[in-house]
Length: 197
Image 1 (tube, rainbow, N blue to C red):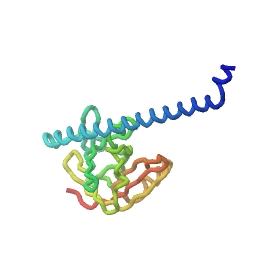
Image 2: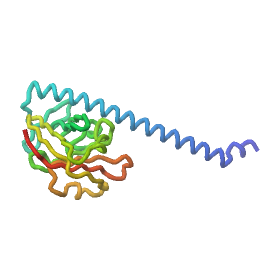
Image 3: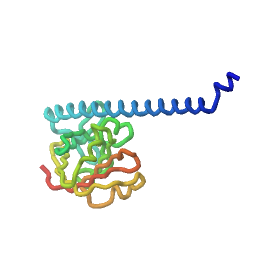
Image 4: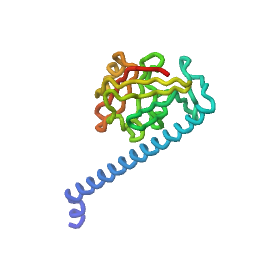
């Protein structure tokens, strides 16, 4: 009789419920620690980039003649600056799942060709602040060769993950994208170039 009581449907459901709650707590903890680590790492990389750019602003070796700066074994093409968000982020040359855990990455194009697309996780210290960006905000991209591209936000939209053609469509000089909080769509910020310094 005691064995039957121990395996009652109510107790089994409680055990399953506790298991799912503990699993959810574990997932949230891992995601939070990953986001904090990524934010701290991006800040360290940015500091190293700033020091290196001051010491030797002539960096070369990127794809298609683009300049890159190698820091800790990864190539960076420049720094993305959001004055309205008080945020600066290093931009890695090649997008990959592993690279995007360090910093936002070039997804395709370049500032020089006028079709620059940058992808980033919605970590708090990466692209998590993009949801606060507004139409007409300026975004700066300082490449490692010393040029600064100044853009104005001209559209903000949500795209589904399968809409890769739409992501690359249009006459946008700069496109930034990240997952929304739900993960079902991608927050996409479209910009036009207004000045190069």
